[in-house]
Length: 279
Image 1 (tube, rainbow, N blue to C red):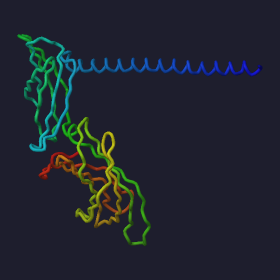
Image 2: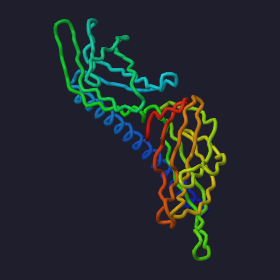
Image 3: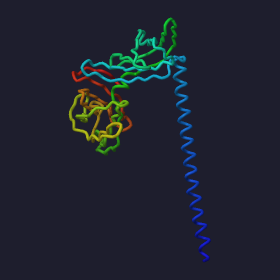
Image 4: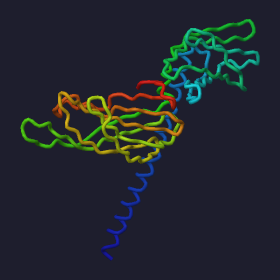
């Protein structure tokens, strides 16, 4: 009988913790919803401030056309005013760009070179005789919207050698291919190319592991650079669309691990070998 009060106390303590947990969880959810609501209000306020109150919201996306080697930018805006006679014109790269009405929204397609920084500087909303204009500061870096981002790193070690001989370094190069927005392509081939003094001398396939938002590529490297024979490793990626990416993953311009340079640049080529962009 003496154990009963203790059992009841323990039960009450557990129930108290459970109640406290659910109370804190409810408060956290309410706090999170409040934060999301405030962020949405701030986002809408920023959009209205940018367009001087003429636009409720805006949306920009892009795709790449392999046949023409150009990018298609899709621009969509929603004016604050909803009259039937409304017309919307954007000023893009210094030229008027009329949008087409679809319901309460206005949309347009703009074709530009793949490596273009597109600037939309103004919006004009016309309703009958009333014309309203607002300055915009929209800057669209086209290549970042249509081409994947490639980033690389390496890890490994050096090997001691007799005096007078070039030191040997070996390890693993790892690349991450991140796709812009909802765009995604299949990697049909990936290889690691070794160049000595600018000349390709060896290559081998890379392991490709697909992730939710991109792909991870891994491969081994071994290099013994000298002053006369610097070593560079390129990751060559071929996409299903025919695009080819050449990413400079590792550069050993001279002996010594302190001179390693990685994740340098990515060049995007069309299926016909035309350089489209450098990233």
